[in-house]
Amino acid sequence: MKYLILLGPVLLGLVAGCAFAQDDKAAAARQEEQRSCSPCHSLRLVDSQRLSQAAWDKELTKMIGWGAVVSNRQLLLDYLSQQYGVCVPRTADPLSANGAKSHGSGR
Amino acid sequence: MSVSVNTTRRELLALIVAASAAANGQEITIPGKRPLIVHNDRPEDLETPASYFSSWITPNDAFFVRQHLPRPSVQEASHRVALDGRVGKQLQLSTADLRKLPQYTVAATLECTGNGRGFYRPAVPGVQWMRGAIGNAEWTGPRLSDVLKLAGADLNAAYVTTNGADTGVAKTPDFIRSMPMKKALHPATILALQMNHEPIPELHGFPVRLIVPGWDGTSWVKWVTNLTVANEPNTGFFMNPGYRFPKHAVAPGTPVNPADLEVIEGMPVKSLIASVSDQQRIPLAPARLRGIAWAGEQRIRQVEVSCDSGRTWNDAQLGREDLPFAWRLWEYQWTPPKEGYYTILSRATDSAGNIQPVVATWNPSGYLYNAIDQVGVIVEKGA
Image 1: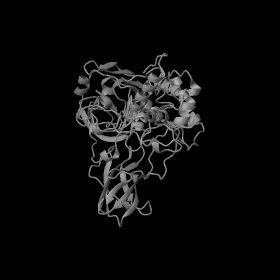
Image 2: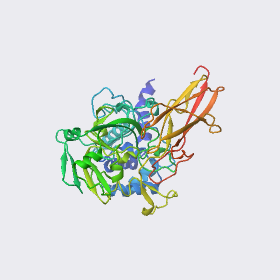
Image 3: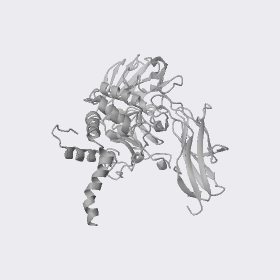
Image 4: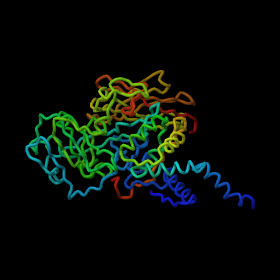
């Protein structure tokens, strides 16, 4: 048990490492994605796509034309093509929590 | 979200974890909306789960949302709809002015032009809508033709162009749409002030939205600020090349000659199975299958259902509500012969004889998906 407790942070680190950043390059790419895309829309819109590298390249051209500021295009293109390529299984988009009773923009 | 150049690796990791948590859909609540499928939370692109389509009218709190640009904040008291171009006199109409005109209520189905894009293979970029970027509502307001006449518009002009209060971020183009005068003058084309007898919700275009019955959702401009009468259509991105469909089938990855792209207008015939969801377990007992069917400017003539993967088809019974531009409910009584896995299909035929295809026509932007609908169900005793 004692060992398990000690191992906890290590395991967590491993999980986080797999899920978010395998190395510095992936972290930098994710940062580049945020910096480039999130001023105009959530990253959810990006991450739900499954496109070939050629299609991602075309999207980057379109978005840069619309004002996206991309500082490292090749890094971002490689990242999008690998993380959200045609062979990557799709994940279902989530349901929002119930906001029907809160007065707001939906009503 | 900005990241300083001095961000440490730990801070960066925390930032990425937070961004990932947000991207995983945690803690997203849309005020005024029941749980909806979140394709994009900024700006909001929200899909209605098919299981909600159990009534002829889709309640406002269940209605899908599509936004190209961030939602503007509009104050009704100061809001004006400007009429210009080929008009006798330029006008600035308040919502009070619009309410002074005769008010009409139109039931009409609104479907996103890209509804079903997520089914296309090869995949195409854009919001990955599946089945629920559609809803049916009653819209109330003055006829667009009455508003145009108020300004002494040249009714022989070719187009009416509509702009809304939303504007592009950075260099994103403004969302502006043109429609031919003939459709603008159609008695069912209105400037709605109400949706299902309530003020139009902000997300749906408060305080005034263009209703273009039978046509794709892109034509239904929200937060209307400008109506311009002209002999030429607007040439901005959202008219060209946006929201156009190739005249001929094109191979994925090949460029399309711009001259072969046509503006999308009426929506194609389509149906949807709503009362059972894909991979649902249902009991070995008589089942009442229900769904919806619609056909743009046409009427629904027939809905057929197959419970054996398309080997045999039988007519569904159409619902009582039967109005132009509004979807039809349908139902079909099915008694599963025995336990097992069944693929249920629905296909609709419209009044012009158009029938839903087995496979929708692939196109580079993933518009107008209307293939036969399909769900698989597991029939079990005691399910």
